[in-house]
Image (cartoon, rainbow, N blue to C red; front, side, top):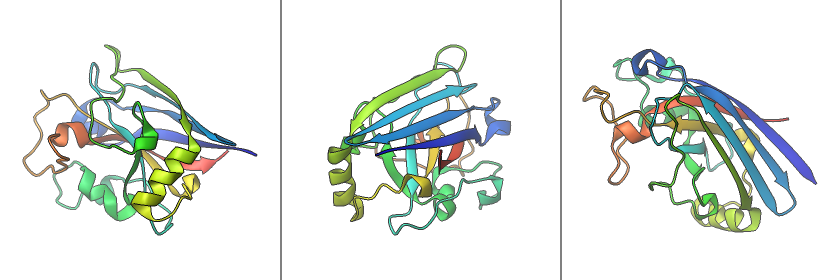
Length: 185
C-alpha cells in the first residue's frame, strides 16, 4: 500500500537571516521504501543545510515552531526553543537517513541562488529498525511530525543567547530557517 505525505515548508527566523526560506517536502511510503523529495528556495546561499523530521517519541502530535517559541526574547527561535512544540530531532535527510546519524557533513548545500533539491530512497526496514532502537517504536507516524531545515553562514553574527550546539557543530549549523507540518496527502 502506498501512502503519500506532504509538508509545505515556511520561513522561520527570516527577519534576522535576511531570506525567506521556503519549499516543499514529499514523503512516499511504498512497501519497503520511503521516497523523500525536498526542494528549497531562498535559503542562505552556498550553505550546507541540515534537514530532519522532528517529533515526540510518545506519538504526541508535533507542531511547527513560530516566533511565539522565542523564550529568551532574542528575536530568534533556536533549536532548543523548538522542542516544546516540535519534539526532538528524529530522522536526518542526509546521505543515509536510515542510519539516523544526525551530526555529519552529508546534507545538501544550497547554490548561489539559495536553491537545493534533495531526493532519496530509504529502505524502510532499516529505518524502522534504527528508529525502534532509538525511540522504542518502529511507527514513523509521519503525519505527527514536522520538518525543519537548518543552517546559516558562519559569517552571520548570532547573538550569544542563541543555543543549539550539537557535537562539534555550533548554532550556525542548527539554527532553524524553515519548518513545515507533515500531513497525509
